[in-house]
Amino acid sequence: MAEQQSNQFIVYTFGIQIDGVQLEQLKTVSGISQEREVVTTHHTTDKGVEFISKQPGKRTVPSVTITRGMDKSKALNDWIKISHDEGDIDKARKNVTIEMKDNKGTTVRRVTLERAWVSKWVSGDLTAGESNAIDETVTIECESLKVEHA
Image (tube, rainbow, N blue to C red):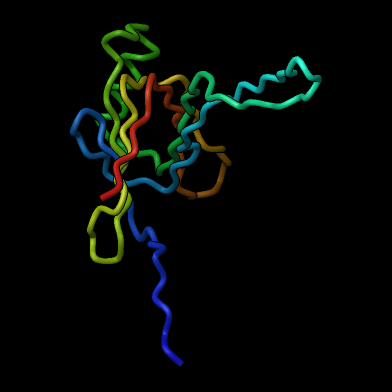
């Protein structure tokens, strides 16, 4: 029996860059999506026959969430500071690139969040007396999302 080869790729690693600056480590990235609303219209002919038409509506852009171990990453901390402490969203808008890589380190998909900014930062839970690593979660908003298939 011949072995079938899968067209699927398995993402072994992924990385994220903020305006070309690579963040050190990530645990998860979620919320990457593209969507268009669907506009449904009902029409009736002069003979009383009804038909339905579907058209593409407005596009929506996602909120993407990244989770990572809290560290001293200057790139991410500065971006959060500009977005929240300074409140300068025009200055905070950055292009964010997420690269998904296969087991050989080859980029198989690249997603770019354009004119992105940080809308939310959350610290992991703190528990007295434990020496667990702390995670942080950052929610990123963007104006458009582009997917490139490598």
